[in-house]
Image (cartoon, rainbow, N blue to C red; front, side, top):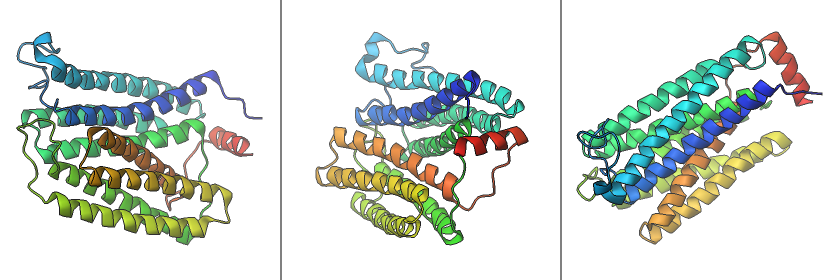
Length: 307
């Protein structure tokens, strides 16, 4: 029987909290953009010249933007706590040795995310910098999925070589799909502020290219599901990704044909984070990566928990 120690239970909770928080900050960032609050705090690192906090005179836009900035400190606090406890548990051999390294990288990524966000404000919400701001969050979500796996000692799936290779292709195409979605956003009307520039690309054609890439991804996912059908665990991994893709695709078409209502766009951003987590979950467990390096006690514990 696998008895989970209280510190590792706490670590698992911290890893899950880190994943959820890094997803939520994407949602609040979308709220900032969609409410036109991107320059609610017109400077950085101060909210306005002479004040690090929003003032009543800045109104609702200042409050929304400042609230999003405050969430960064929550993420940083969770990342620091995760790193400290992961170091302790890794030294005791209860989690993989890479876990504190990944936790530290997440902390650095949160700092980088804050800096990129500040630069986007200083550059008056340049759409390419805003897009980079979003893309950093994608990789933070993927890293947090890995943290959850390590905290739970989730063993990799035994995928046949052709399926593992297909997983790698699907992961790469999934990242391209997200990147194209970011480009569509930069061409669209929700700039974060009425005076912010757009990327001067056609909204119609960027949306079409994005949609074509999604259809390609969907086809490959169906192929992966077909190849994985005989293995219960692999089938569930591919079914999870397929469900995320179908939901996200449905929301995407609804927002396109209803001309981007705010509520549907926020739902699409929520879907993006769920899709990213599902994509990373599949890739980390069924891709063609090297075997996980573990200490002797960790390997034994993983065998016990997998029974």
